[in-house]
Image 1 (cartoon, helix red, strand yellow):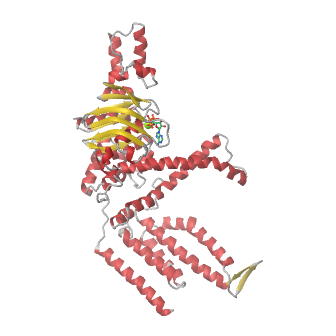
Image 2 (cartoon, helix red, strand yellow; image 1 turned 60 degrees about the vertical axis):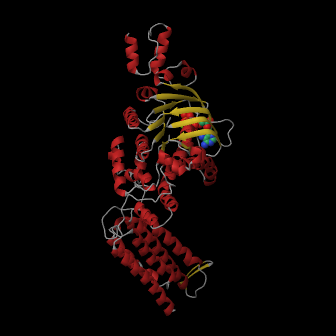
Image 3 (tube, chains in turn cyan, brown; image 1 turned 90 degrees about the vertical axis):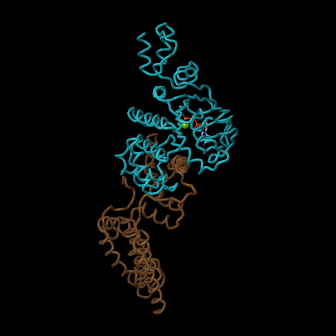
Length: 279
Length: 257
Ligand SMILES: Nc1ncnc2c1ncn2[C@@H]1O[C@H](COP(=O)(O)OP(=O)(O)OP(=O)(O)O)[C@@H](O)[C@H]1O
Ligand SMILES: [Mg+2]
């Protein structure tokens, strides 16, 4: 059975005219890395909140359908139980700093203190998580003194240290340079290899093509496409609907019209483009 | 900007090594007698305060704080009280309708002494105690976690709000908002700042609530704490002595009066 299932999920925020999510049906296997793409306002963040239990337990409004993670229904759990299994890092890293801690090390320990992890184990887990995401040298800095990209790394680490079974990341690299982005994707891939299930909202399609197992495309609250990264990210439908497209895909699409691209599939990454044009 | 955003001075001293609760007990064993006992006592409490400043090795920061914050406040209070406290016979100074009397000056002196004792004791506590340790220790002893969170995050977030107000002002000014002319005009032109500051804060509060919730803040499990905060027998005995001293001072006070 799938580890995460969304069955006919429809959700509307209070005081809004139309649903932010409409009839979403989705299954995610354990250890799978699913990327979510979509234009602004598509409902990506809302989907993250729904997976992490904040819809409907924090945001009121109307939720129909059913979300199941690890055999448990989100509607039947309480939020504080739900977050033990599902970790969420969201878009703005600044607002994810707890504000209760004075160093990055303490900030990372905050979640572990809350769930009662013994002190010695806490220290070990924080050290491990910092090594994983490469922020060891930030340990003694104030979280407020960091750059946006560094804060995003801290936000990601503060969730990883909790060892969730389902990791939900909402644009975790939006303020990062290419090196930071690569590290985040590698870490996330590694966690997935180790059995963590990952849902990641991301605009950087070339990275998705390299690292994710599957992609779903959202628009106006509906899932419009879903499948293998290369198939979804090169589909004409995305290009026509305002989704972010790799420049290699659009170049090859033009080339194909003029008969310069011979392969059936369009490329997403530089490597695929080079290989295709070389033929 | 102060990146640490706390008063804490990280040096090693006998005061730094006391348990936070012991220091809190010391603070109250200064404040309670200062306010509830004979007014003449308060000025003398400056002596133990000064001793504590040196034992805690925070002279520089303390006197800095004293000059910038405490002295202006208590001077202002002293002047106001001397002028406006009614009663007293011995007129020292006559300023039109105001009489400054010996008695009003004396009572103003006692009042500001009390204020001085209060602010100074808390200042020394904050200078020698890491805020996380203070809060962890108090939460461990049963202070509700939410309460501790509110206190400590307010300490941290105030400078953030201030920085943000500056950013918004800069942004509005670049769009032609007048923040530099006459007072009345300035008040009027502040109105457009309120929206972004307050609304921005509400969204931030919501996101922050989600963020700490996602990290188990309302979990019903028994919380643990990263810092081990020692509470040796010495501290317990000291607290016992302080309680006895405070009670004794009240008894003495009642007996004398
Ligand atoms: N707290 C809220 N209350 C009411 N409506 C909201 C709230 N948050 C989002 N919405 C609305 O729900 C819809 C989906 O928003 P959502 O934030 O999920 O989009 P998104 O795909 O994450 O966009 P972005 O790329 O800008 O992050 C939008 O129409 C938005 O206006
Ligand atoms: Mg979003």
